[in-house]
Each structure stands twice: as C-alpha cells, then as structure tokens.
Length: 342
Image (cartoon, rainbow, N blue to C red; front, side, top):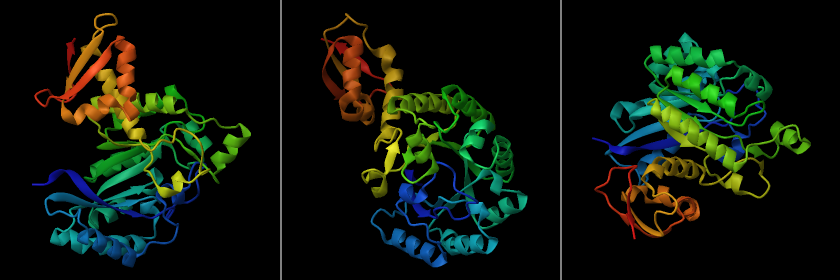
C-alpha cells in the first residue's frame, strides 16, 4: 500500500521539442533550469539522486515526470533514449509510473503508441485555452480541436490525461475562460493544472505589457477566476492538482516578473478562497454575535486562517464578531466548522 501523496521526480527539459516560443514563455526562468539538451546520462543521474535521498520511501507511489518542452515532438531516438533509461527502474519497481507534458498538436496514433510502449502512463496536454481566438493571439500554433482530438486519442489508448490551462492570456476574459472550463469538463480529463498568466521579463508579452497592448490579471481577479474554475472542475469530478506557477529562485529575482498575479502562495490563496465560500453557511449573520469560537478539523485550520490571517479578518468583517479562538476538532468532517457564540 502506498501513502496518499506520491513522490514525483521532476526532470525538466525546457523548450526541447517546442516548434516556437509562445508570447508568454520563458521556461528557463519558470524552472530555474538552463535550456540545454537533456540526455539519458542526465536522467540516470537524477534518478540515482532521487533513489538515494531521504524522502525516497518504499511505501510511496513514485513517479518520474518530464516537465517543460514538448515531449512528443522530440525526435524518436531522443524519446527512446530518455524513456529507455527509466524502463529498468519501472521493471524492478523502483519507480511505478512516468508522465510527460506535450503540446496538443504533437500527438498522433503512432506517437501515442510509442509513448505507451515505453512505459508512459500519464500525458499532460499544454492546452492553455480552448478558445481559438485566444490561441491565435497567443501564437500557440494549435487549435482547441487539437486538444479535444488528442485527449480523445490518449484516453482511447489507456493513458491518464491532464490538461494545463492559463487564465488571463491575450484576448481572454472571465467569460471566455469560463467557456474553456466548460469544454474541459466535457472532455473529462483525469486532472487539470491552472497557471494564471504572469508576465516575465524578456518575453513578447512583456513588450506588449510595457507598451499597453496587454494588461495582466490582478491578483484578486486571478484568485476569483481560479477559485470558480476549481469549484466547477472538482464538482465535475476532475481534480485540480496545481494552481499557480511553482516557486523558483529565478522568479524571486527583482524585475523578473513584470506584471501579473505572481504570488508564492497563490495556490493557498485560491484554496482558502474556496474554503471561505464553503463555510459561509455555518457563520452567524451580522449582529448575531459579538465574539465567537470556531471548532474546525486540524488539517483545515490553515485554509480558514488564509494567507497571513486574511481569512480570519474576512470572517470578522462578514460577521462583525471577534474570533476568540480557533480550536482543532477532528470529530468534524473536512469542510465543516462548528461555531460557538460567546
């Protein structure tokens, strides 16, 4: 039996296999990895490091994940080289699965069969949007139909399918992104990632932002859009496994982020927003209490408190009551609170 949370060994291949640069893209900054070719020797070294690390556990599901680039557009010999290194680890049970990320227009039946035969079990499609006008303005070079076709092909071949989305792209708006989410729900992938657009120095999008041609989402707008999207996706049985860009040393450097909703705890902001919405029915109305104590499952406390206690202040503003205490109570199910009026 495995622990609930898997151990993922990330292998970054920034821009490898990509036919061109999209207007928002700078994978070197996002991953803090130089855009140099990754070969089998690199993969072997990274897997050996992971195997010898203190976090490696025999009880955990262990997955090798190739991120960045367009994996299915790599030359076939390179695909065989990279996945061939992983194969012996899969056979002996050191690792249990492999996932790759790729563009929706990089797949056909032959490529899907190749990935399947080399041990890949999950493919994430960098769809970004399912609105053709947004894709055109972003210079993605593929269509919404490509995403729908590739997702169908992958599911038919027995892959687990992920879809990566980017709210806030050029030409996008809350209504258009809501339509994208509805199309994703109809596709029924196994998972979704949400990466609201952050404008990075040196990109075409940075030039557009500085000239006034593009305006990024504010932090509040991005939180609301992602929270509403998460709610709809997860109510449809589609887990959202990542919200916001990963934190990297490069993104922390002064001036690297030109504009947009960059926040090191963005995912927590969204999850806290969702939690606040879910517990509203359990809170007293304004004027019903001057002071309250909240009992809550211990694992939910950070969601209630929010980033730097913003959640606490939000509850106090809504109820006009002071929170006298937040007490752990694991007899309550997750997502439920009990309020005691003092």
